[in-house]
Image (cartoon, rainbow, N blue to C red; front, top):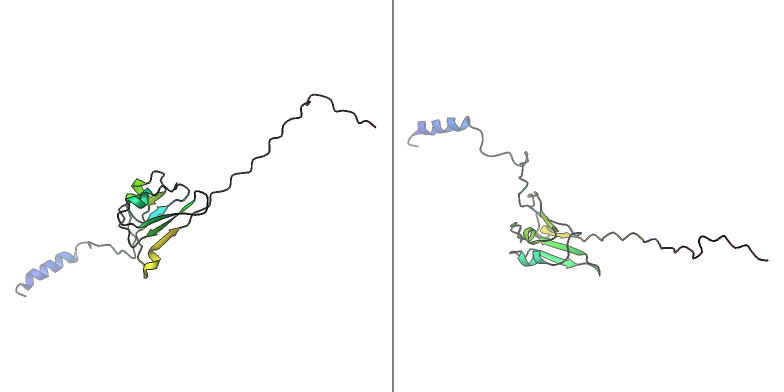
Length: 146
């Protein structure tokens, strides 16, 4: 402590300044719309090409076919993901999107495995049978014969 006056001047200068940090857990911060947070999977758009799996540098995505129809589910290992959003850029059908969710801390590693279950596609509405008009639609009804 060679110069206590210099330290006191520094202390008084910082007492009057605004803090450089925010009170994060108590005040939520605004995240920009382009923030690359948790990946969201939209199973209705997925065609199963698996380009996202091939492009992921961390091998954090697995796409699985569910059932006989073209319905897919995605498994994301968030502990492997580096949040580069390369999978989102490579998806041609917009089945992957980034969210602004960044509070992903978990106590156990198994909670970081996210499985987006495939939603079955709604069944097609039943087609009404096409009834052909009778051949002699313009003719008068026949009289009953006894």
